[in-house]
Image 1 (cartoon, one colour):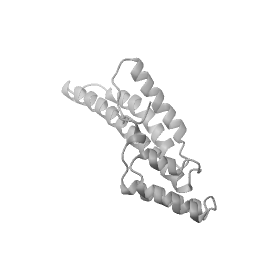
Image 2 (cartoon, helix red, strand yellow; image 1 turned 90 degrees about the horizontal axis):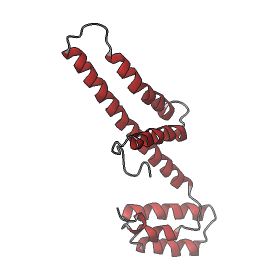
Image 3 (tube, helix red, strand yellow; image 1 turned 90 degrees about the vertical axis):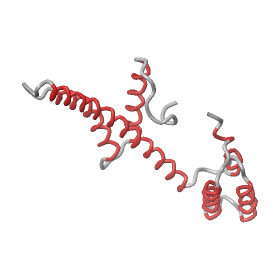
Image 4 (cartoon, one colour; image 1 turned 135 degrees about the horizontal axis):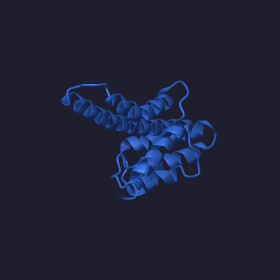
Length: 163
C-alpha cells in the first residue's frame, strides 16, 4: 500500500480541514490573514501531506478529536462483529454436528457456544455499555490477534486495525 500522505484528497477532505481552520480562527489561534492564507493552501492541496502541512502547528480541534473517536469506535465495532461471526459459525457447525448425530444426549454444543461467545459478550458490553472502555477492548482484540498470529493463522480484520 502506498504512503497515506501521498494519497490524493477529495473535496470532502478539503472542506473538513477548512472547517477545522475556522474553528481555530474562532478560538483565536489564527488571525484572519493566517486563516485566509491557510484556506487558500487548503483548497489548492492535492495530497494528504499538503493538507497536513496546513494544520501541522495547530492542535487537534474538538471536531477532529470527535471524528477520530468515531473512527476508532467504528473500527472496534467492525472487528467485534467479525469475531462474533467467526464464533457464531463455529457454534453453528457444532449444532449441525449434534443434530446430524441424532441430537441424542445432552446439548453439548452449549459449551462451545459459551466459550466462544463469552469473551465477545464481555467486549461488546465494554464497547457498547453505559461506560465504554475502548482501550481495554482494543487491547483484548490486539492480544487475540497476536495469539492467532503466533499460532500461524492468517490475519483477519481490517488492515488498518493492528500494525
